[in-house]
Image (tube, rainbow, N blue to C red; front, side):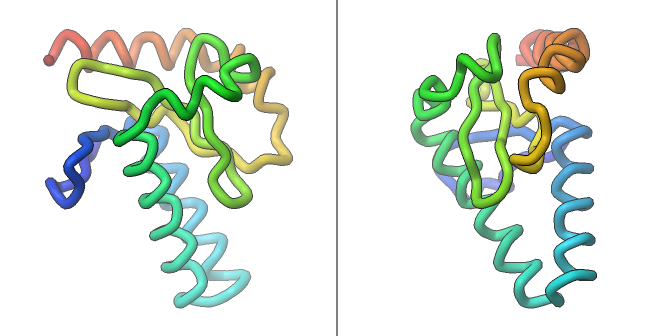
Length: 122
């Protein structure tokens, strides 16, 4: 799990799964569109994570699709996250063509375990 390195006033955490998602998104973008575009796309994803950390309630607009978690659109992806004492924890970042409802349902036990582990460390 990695944090924001203090560069943003609103704290966030990434689960291993979310960090892996970001690496995969960057690698695929780099292969398809080149390093510059991949870097800009990743920067946009991190900016959206910072925005969600600064205003976590944004994710309630699409919560019906990601219950019990929060979700925001980020370019061609959805970021699914939850609230923890330290701020927000990003659980996964998935392409919008994915069946988000099914994915969240399948991963909910894993996400709950991660969130509880983070809360215990707080």
